[in-house]
Length: 125
Image (tube, rainbow, N blue to C red; front, side):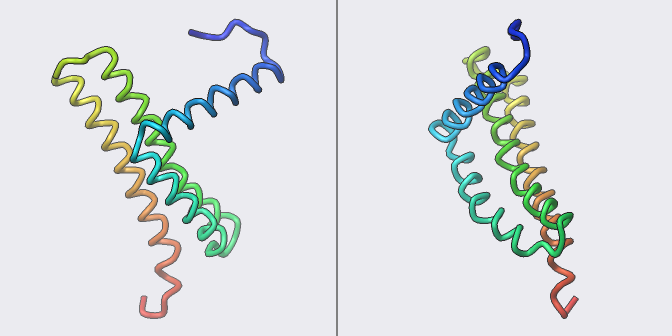
């Protein structure tokens, strides 16, 4: 439901609270999110160190952060599907599979970004 409160600092603080609740729920209920968040905690500092300039740092770190962000969307989608369709249904399965595929594509983008930026630095290429 859309908020009817006026926009301002109070609404921003409330939105941050809702976001924090979502992160906590994902951490508690989604093993994939926990793993991807832990990997991001390791890889983002490495990305900031290995990037030769601001653009490379943003691409390396951003591609890593995109994966847990998409996992949050996938977890939300799965929760909605489970709530609305508790029985097995082809469309429910398709929705879940497509959410999983979106996470996989983000992982591919992340991998390709790191390869394209970092591989040319090795002398044998």
